[in-house]
Image (tube, rainbow, N blue to C red):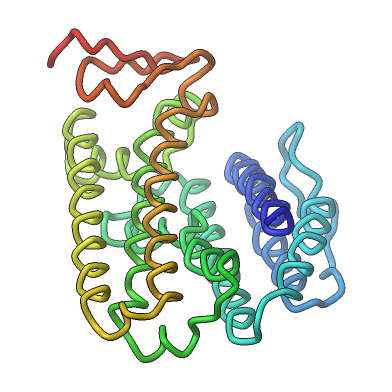
Length: 288
């Protein structure tokens, strides 16, 4: 587990680097940054990279360091994966890198993606498809054949990835809005569909609930069938569900998105939410 945790930590470094590229005038360098990480996925030497390709923003992460951390933590994970899972995980990472670059370019150019494009891209870019592979890895199983022959089983990861993206967008909106980042479905719904902030939040919540209901329905059908008799499948389905609920708990409670001393306890189900520059506050006594 520590091996995987070390690798997952590098997503923060990559996120930070993407953000600096979005704020930089050297956006063309993001393609070379992707090449660096893609080379790491293939076990190749670092691709050529000039100082002029780095983000032109103070305090930007060192690209060579990010690449080194990514490759150094990735290789032990790949070494422990069965062949089928390993090949799928490399492909997942390639898709994730490509989606991240596409997001950065849109943000740097001041473009707000249309809703369909955003919902296609965002679940990939936020490492949503890591969740299925990581669940297999931590359980010590390889479902490559089952996922290729059972479309409904394979599609559950789409629900997990979408849940991760929507929940992240909902709860990170305050922090990212004040930092000038607009990669959020809340912002997309506001700009592209003309919804108020409350309307965009409500639509995001509706999508989260619809997606969760779809996941549960698919999961229950699988559990009721022949696949559901297998222990590895049942453990996999449980793990995907835990990843969704764990992601929601993290985003409701973490200081990264809500400031220090934040209390969004499970007892608070409604009230007035105020998005201050340094914190989220909730008044459960107030009603809109």
